[in-house]
Length: 194
Image (tube, rainbow, N blue to C red):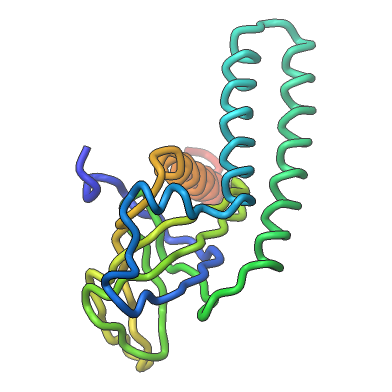
C-alpha cells in the first residue's frame, strides 16, 4: 500500500517537533532504529504484548474471558496513560503543538510561521486515545496560509517503524469509529422514530 493510500482523521494530539537543520543530520533508516528513545521502545513492546493478549483472549469464549479481557484493557489503559504522561514531561523539543489531522502517512498542524518545503523534522506524536507514542522523522510536503494568518503545515513521514504505522492506523480507525458512533447517537436523538 502506498503511503498516500492511508486516510487521516481530524484530531488534536500532542506533537513535538525538532527541525533538522542539515541534510546530513538525517539518519539512515538503520540509524533511525538505533536512536529511538527507550521509552518509545517500551511503549511499542507494550503494544505488541497487548496485541498478543488480545489474540489469546479472542480465542476464549467464556464469560470469564470477557471479564479478564476487560481487566487487562483497563490495566493497559492505565499503564499507557502513565507512560504517555512521562513522555510529555520528559520530552525536550524545540516546538510543542497539536495536530489538526493525523494518519498513517501524514499529519498536519498549525504554525504561526511558514515552514520551508522539504524541511525535515524529528517528530514525537503522543496519542491520547488509544494511548501510544510515535517517534519518527517527517518532511514538509505542503504549507497553506489560513484566514487567521496561521500556516497549516502538512508533514509526510520519512522514517517510521512499521509497528508505529500500524498503531497510527488503529488509532485513526478508533477515532473514526468514535466519531461515527457519536453521529449515529445524535441522529437517533434528532430522529427518534427513524
